[in-house]
Length: 309
Image (cartoon, rainbow, N blue to C red; front, side, top):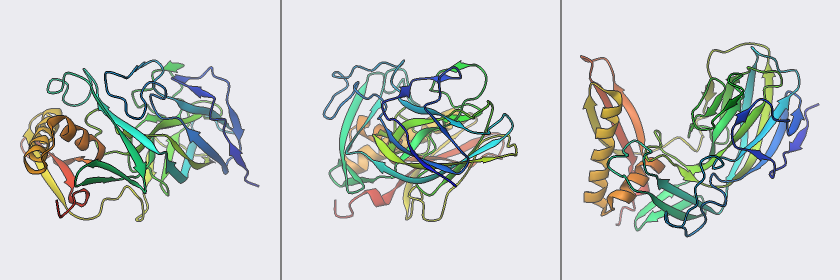
């Protein structure tokens, strides 16, 4: 019979490490209840500016786990059903020197914090961000190397920053070590596809996930999103396009153009426009086949704007 477990929220780790003692052992089909600290817990706080913050990149990610799944062996697949997710009452977003898609355009640091209530963050007068919480990091230990930074995604998933993995979604990841060694963290209240400034709307998160083991192999992580998923954006959008033979340059052109549009049409500063692109703008590959030129769009959902503003 499937069981339910509450994982100790005080036991965290800051990198992938196959030598860590599992916090919890579960059977296939069991549910784990989580209470996950925000990235940068204690390093940024409500009302903080960039000058106030004390970022430490060795400890900025707070990962819950690892969870040992009984019977898991290399070559298996772990299914993660995301049953419920609830954001905390505050969040933060930033761009940081040397990071993000446009580090040369935004060479200094900038941090904003937000009160989160009623599934909305008020970004600016006339601009409200609907919240769709998810974990930026979900996955099994990749096997090699034994110790790995938490920042890049890997063959077991990891820091995939997939905003579509909201409550009701399912993720499948390969198992590379005995016990699977599943961890999660980096909770977000909202994010756009691309997370272009380097952060989402980072926020504490609580919720529940069911872990199911399959004795079959997959080559790479997979996911499924229901039609009712909070990540699905309904309605229209404003978009800008970047055209270039280089995918990243196409992305930069599209985001710069969206920042320009947000400044001209909505009165945002360039700093805030860049954050908004990261929190709720979606980078989309529109076309790849014509004469080696990529067409990348940055889309901004028009539903976030107050029609009366």
